[in-house]
Length: 183
Image 1 (cartoon, rainbow, N blue to C red):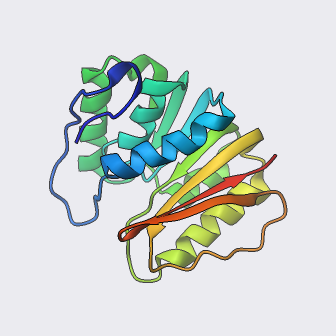
Image 2 (image 1 turned 90 degrees about the vertical axis):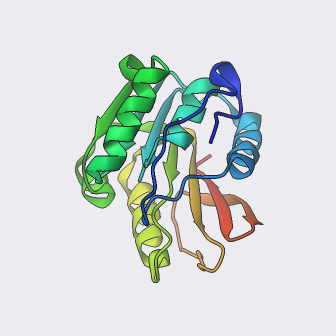
Protein backbone atom coordinates (compact mmCIF):
# COMPACT_ATOMS: atom_id res chain seq x y z
CA UNK A 1 0.00 0.00 0.00
CA UNK A 2 1.37 3.37 -1.05
CA UNK A 3 0.56 7.06 -0.69
CA UNK A 4 -1.24 7.96 -3.92
CA UNK A 5 -0.78 11.74 -4.08
CA UNK A 6 1.00 14.80 -2.80
CA UNK A 7 4.54 15.25 -1.53
CA UNK A 8 4.79 11.62 -0.33
CA UNK A 9 3.34 10.09 -3.50
CA UNK A 10 4.61 6.57 -4.13
CA UNK A 11 6.03 6.06 -0.63
CA UNK A 12 5.12 2.71 0.91
CA UNK A 13 3.13 2.47 4.15
CA UNK A 14 3.99 -0.15 6.76
CA UNK A 15 1.06 -2.45 7.55
CA UNK A 16 0.31 -5.78 9.19
CA UNK A 17 -2.26 -8.58 9.09
CA UNK A 18 -5.12 -8.16 11.56
CA UNK A 19 -8.77 -9.16 11.20
CA UNK A 20 -10.03 -5.73 12.30
CA UNK A 21 -7.57 -3.68 10.21
CA UNK A 22 -8.74 -3.11 6.66
CA UNK A 23 -6.64 -0.40 5.01
CA UNK A 24 -8.42 1.85 2.55
CA UNK A 25 -7.47 0.82 -0.98
CA UNK A 26 -5.47 3.14 -3.22
CA UNK A 27 -8.44 3.43 -5.60
CA UNK A 28 -10.81 4.53 -2.84
CA UNK A 29 -8.31 6.99 -1.33
CA UNK A 30 -7.69 8.53 -4.75
CA UNK A 31 -11.44 8.93 -5.33
CA UNK A 32 -12.03 10.49 -1.90
CA UNK A 33 -9.23 13.01 -2.24
CA UNK A 34 -10.29 13.94 -5.77
CA UNK A 35 -13.74 14.85 -4.38
CA UNK A 36 -12.22 16.76 -1.45
CA UNK A 37 -9.88 18.75 -3.69
CA UNK A 38 -12.77 20.86 -4.95
CA UNK A 39 -13.28 22.44 -1.52
CA UNK A 40 -9.80 22.94 -0.09
CA UNK A 41 -8.27 23.95 2.29
CA UNK A 42 -8.42 21.47 5.15
CA UNK A 43 -5.63 22.39 7.53
CA UNK A 44 -6.60 20.24 10.53
CA UNK A 45 -7.59 16.59 10.07
CA UNK A 46 -9.04 14.05 12.49
CA UNK A 47 -8.61 10.41 11.43
CA UNK A 48 -10.87 8.19 13.58
CA UNK A 49 -10.19 4.43 13.63
CA UNK A 50 -6.90 5.40 12.01
CA UNK A 51 -5.38 1.92 11.67
CA UNK A 52 -2.09 2.34 9.80
CA UNK A 53 -2.90 6.01 9.18
CA UNK A 54 -3.32 5.72 5.40
CA UNK A 55 -6.12 8.28 5.12
CA UNK A 56 -4.66 10.86 7.52
CA UNK A 57 -1.17 10.50 6.06
CA UNK A 58 -2.63 10.93 2.57
CA UNK A 59 -4.19 14.20 3.80
CA UNK A 60 -0.86 15.34 5.28
CA UNK A 61 0.89 14.46 2.02
CA UNK A 62 -1.58 16.50 -0.03
CA UNK A 63 -2.72 19.55 1.95
CA UNK A 64 -3.15 19.22 5.72
CA UNK A 65 -1.00 21.12 8.16
CA UNK A 66 -1.68 18.79 11.09
CA UNK A 67 -3.53 15.58 11.89
CA UNK A 68 -4.86 13.83 14.96
CA UNK A 69 -5.07 10.05 14.68
CA UNK A 70 -7.39 8.17 17.03
CA UNK A 71 -6.71 4.44 17.27
CA UNK A 72 -7.53 2.17 20.21
CA UNK A 73 -5.57 -0.90 19.03
CA UNK A 74 -1.98 -0.88 20.35
CA UNK A 75 -0.49 -2.78 17.39
CA UNK A 76 -2.14 -0.49 14.87
CA UNK A 77 -1.00 2.59 16.82
CA UNK A 78 2.57 1.23 16.79
CA UNK A 79 2.47 0.81 12.99
CA UNK A 80 0.93 4.27 12.65
CA UNK A 81 3.72 5.75 14.80
CA UNK A 82 6.29 3.99 12.59
CA UNK A 83 4.68 5.37 9.42
CA UNK A 84 4.61 8.91 10.78
CA UNK A 85 8.27 8.70 11.79
CA UNK A 86 9.31 7.17 8.45
CA UNK A 87 7.69 10.06 6.58
CA UNK A 88 8.91 12.75 9.01
CA UNK A 89 5.35 13.64 10.04
CA UNK A 90 5.55 13.07 13.79
CA UNK A 91 5.78 16.81 14.50
CA UNK A 92 2.62 17.55 12.50
CA UNK A 93 0.71 14.68 14.07
CA UNK A 94 -0.76 13.47 17.31
CA UNK A 95 -1.75 9.87 18.09
CA UNK A 96 -4.50 9.31 20.64
CA UNK A 97 -4.89 5.71 21.82
CA UNK A 98 -8.52 5.80 22.76
CA UNK A 99 -11.98 4.67 21.73
CA UNK A 100 -13.31 6.99 18.99
CA UNK A 101 -16.69 7.62 20.65
CA UNK A 102 -15.10 8.49 23.99
CA UNK A 103 -12.62 10.78 22.23
CA UNK A 104 -15.43 12.66 20.49
CA UNK A 105 -17.43 13.03 23.70
CA UNK A 106 -14.53 14.77 25.49
CA UNK A 107 -12.63 16.51 22.68
CA UNK A 108 -12.91 20.31 22.52
CA UNK A 109 -10.79 20.89 19.41
CA UNK A 110 -12.38 21.53 16.01
CA UNK A 111 -11.26 20.12 12.65
CA UNK A 112 -11.58 21.00 8.97
CA UNK A 113 -11.79 17.36 7.89
CA UNK A 114 -12.91 14.34 9.88
CA UNK A 115 -12.30 10.86 8.47
CA UNK A 116 -14.25 7.95 9.91
CA UNK A 117 -13.38 4.37 8.95
CA UNK A 118 -14.58 1.89 11.58
CA UNK A 119 -14.21 -1.89 11.14
CA UNK A 120 -16.78 -3.51 8.86
CA UNK A 121 -18.79 -5.46 11.43
CA UNK A 122 -22.39 -6.55 11.65
CA UNK A 123 -24.41 -3.62 12.93
CA UNK A 124 -21.57 -1.22 12.06
CA UNK A 125 -24.12 1.27 10.77
CA UNK A 126 -25.27 1.99 14.32
CA UNK A 127 -21.76 2.98 15.40
CA UNK A 128 -21.31 5.17 12.34
CA UNK A 129 -24.67 6.88 12.90
CA UNK A 130 -23.74 7.54 16.54
CA UNK A 131 -20.41 9.09 15.57
CA UNK A 132 -21.83 11.19 12.74
CA UNK A 133 -24.52 12.36 15.18
CA UNK A 134 -21.86 13.36 17.72
CA UNK A 135 -19.97 15.29 15.05
CA UNK A 136 -23.19 16.99 13.91
CA UNK A 137 -24.18 18.03 17.43
CA UNK A 138 -20.77 18.64 18.95
CA UNK A 139 -19.32 21.56 17.04
CA UNK A 140 -16.28 19.45 16.14
CA UNK A 141 -16.28 20.42 12.49
CA UNK A 142 -15.16 23.89 11.41
CA UNK A 143 -17.30 25.94 9.05
CA UNK A 144 -17.13 24.55 5.51
CA UNK A 145 -15.61 21.34 6.90
CA UNK A 146 -16.15 17.84 5.59
CA UNK A 147 -16.76 14.44 7.14
CA UNK A 148 -15.68 11.39 5.15
CA UNK A 149 -17.26 8.09 6.17
CA UNK A 150 -15.97 4.81 4.81
CA UNK A 151 -18.38 1.95 5.43
CA UNK A 152 -19.43 -1.40 4.09
CA UNK A 153 -21.54 -0.96 0.97
CA UNK A 154 -24.13 -3.18 2.73
CA UNK A 155 -24.67 -0.63 5.53
CA UNK A 156 -27.56 1.82 5.15
CA UNK A 157 -26.52 5.27 6.41
CA UNK A 158 -29.61 7.42 6.36
CA UNK A 159 -29.30 9.67 9.40
CA UNK A 160 -31.25 12.75 10.40
CA UNK A 161 -28.82 15.59 10.94
CA UNK A 162 -29.24 19.25 11.84
CA UNK A 163 -26.02 20.80 10.51
CA UNK A 164 -24.46 18.23 8.22
CA UNK A 165 -25.66 17.50 4.71
CA UNK A 166 -24.65 14.47 2.65
CA UNK A 167 -23.02 15.78 -0.53
CA UNK A 168 -21.49 12.60 -1.97
CA UNK A 169 -22.13 8.87 -1.87
CA UNK A 170 -20.55 6.23 -4.09
CA UNK A 171 -19.83 2.50 -3.88
CA UNK A 172 -16.47 0.95 -4.73
CA UNK A 173 -16.95 -2.82 -4.50
CA UNK A 174 -17.69 -3.69 -0.87
CA UNK A 175 -16.85 -0.13 0.26
CA UNK A 176 -19.13 2.90 0.26
CA UNK A 177 -17.90 6.46 0.70
CA UNK A 178 -20.24 9.07 2.18
CA UNK A 179 -19.13 12.70 2.42
CA UNK A 180 -20.94 15.25 4.54
CA UNK A 181 -20.56 19.03 4.62
CA UNK A 182 -21.57 21.63 7.19
CA UNK A 183 -21.54 24.55 4.75
